Image 1 (cartoon, helix red, strand yellow):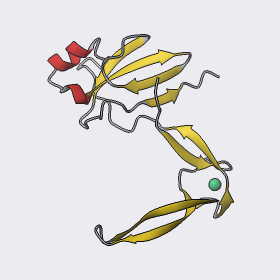
Image 2: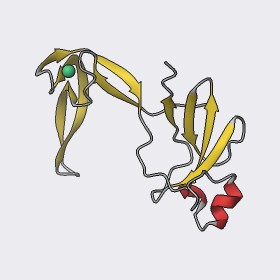
Image 3: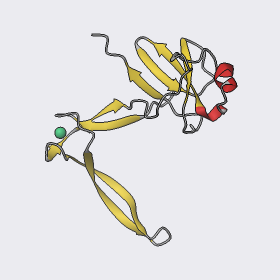
Length: 133
Ligand SMILES: [Zn+2]
């Protein structure tokens, strides 16, 4: 499994509304400020104070399209037959309580396929850890 999408959260309150000290520089082509470099100081807008960031796996951000009966598609071809393009079809695999949403070609520990209205780039993975407690 490669490079799951991760997002920073506040280590105190788990808020995603966090920022990091940075310098911006003016880009004359874009006519906008662009990121130049980032620094160590991190701030939580929720706590309204300095914080340290924890990194968590991002949840799958798109609406899942399933079969009409509410189940996952059994296979990539079945999802294609339902009218979705390859870049709209995701595989869902499970391994040690971790679900990963990725490109459609995976079949090891395969649970099913879903489609999304959005396209994926063929190399992005979202990982969700199931709460087994
Ligand atoms: Zn916080």
